[in-house]
Length: 482
Image 1 (cartoon, rainbow, N blue to C red):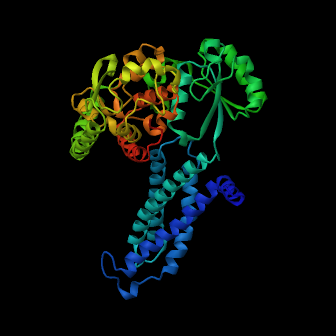
Image 2: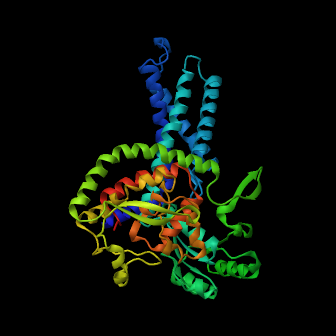
C-alpha cells in the first residue's frame, strides 16, 4: 500500500470516533432538511397555508441545535463507547432510545416556545430520519472497522495462559470472528504436552514461567487467564506480573470452567444468573434446521438436476467406472452412513492410497494431496469447483447430512481424534460449512475442528444462511479446494 494510503488509514483509525460523531451531526441536519422538504415543498400530509410557510433557514437553526443535543445523548447512552464485539442489535437499541429522546424533547420544545403554525410533523419525521440515517452511518462504521482491522489497525495482540477447553473456546471464537480484531499470539501451559505443542495457527510458548519473556518478545497488548480457580495464587501472581509490565490482564471466571458452550447467563436487575444447558442442538433447533434443509434443498435440487445430468455424462465419457463414489462416513453422534459423491478419481484410487501416504499435505488424520495423481481430467474440475459433492443433497433428504455443518469424516479419521475433537460430531455433517468458507484446505486440521465446534456452539438460522451465501463465491473461485 502506498505511504499516503497507510497514513490516511492511520488518521481514520486514530480519529474514527470523532469522524463518526461529525457524520452523525451532519446527518441530523440532513434529517431536518428531508423532513422540511417533504412537508413544505412536497406538501406531504396536507397542503400548507402560504401564511404558515416556514423557510428552511429556521429548521436549519433547529437542526444545528438538534445535532449538538443528539451527540450529547449518543454520548450519554454510550453509542460511541460500544464494547468490542457488541452486536449491532445492542448498538441499534441505543440509537433508537437516543433518537426517541431527541424527538420527544424537540417536539415538546416546539410546543412550548414556538408559534403553533410551525409544523410539529417536521419534528416527528426528522426524528425518524435521524434514526434511519444514523443507523446507516453506524453500519458503515462497522464495515470500516472490519476493513481497518484486516489491515492491522486496531487489532489487539492476545496471549492466553492455560491451554484447556476454555482457552480453545476463545481460540475458535476469535478464529471464526476475525472482525473482532483480536490476534492470538500463542498460549502458555505448564503441561508439556499442551504448552509446547502448536494448536493450528496458535503457538505453544512453553510453561507459564515464560510469561515475562513472552510479554516482551511478542509485544502483547492483553493477557487472558483461563486457569481453574484452584490455582488462585498462580493467577494472582500472573495478574501482578502483567500489572508491573503495564499489560492488561483478564481472568475467565472459574464457574465458566464448566465449558462456555454449556453455560447460559441471564441478568436479573444486575444479578447474574448462571445455568448449565445441554450441549449440541435442542429439539426445536434441530427441527428448524431440518425444515430449512428440506425447503432450501428442494429448491437447490431443481436448479442442480440439469447440471448433475451433464456432469454424470462427462464422468462416464472421461474414464471407465461408476458415476457415483459411495463411501462410509461418520455422521451425527458417531453414526455411520453412506455418503454420495461424483467420482473424481480412477476406480482403483482407494487401493493406491497407501502408496501415496508420503505425499500427504494435510496435518492431523486427514489425507489430502493438492495435485493428486489419481484424479481424472473431469475430476480435477469437480474438485476445484466442489461440484463432486452435489449428490450429497440426497444424503440431506435422507436426514444423514445437512446443507450446512461440519465436514463428514472418515471412520479411520475419527479413530485418531483427540477427546475435544469429538465435539464436532454433535451436529449433522454438511455439504458446506464454516471451515469451507474460511479457507478450506488451506486450514490446518485443528483450525478446521475449532471452526466446526464454534458452529455447533453458536448455530442459528442466520448463521446457516450466511454460510450458504459465502459458499457461492468460494465455489466460483475455487479458493482452497483440492
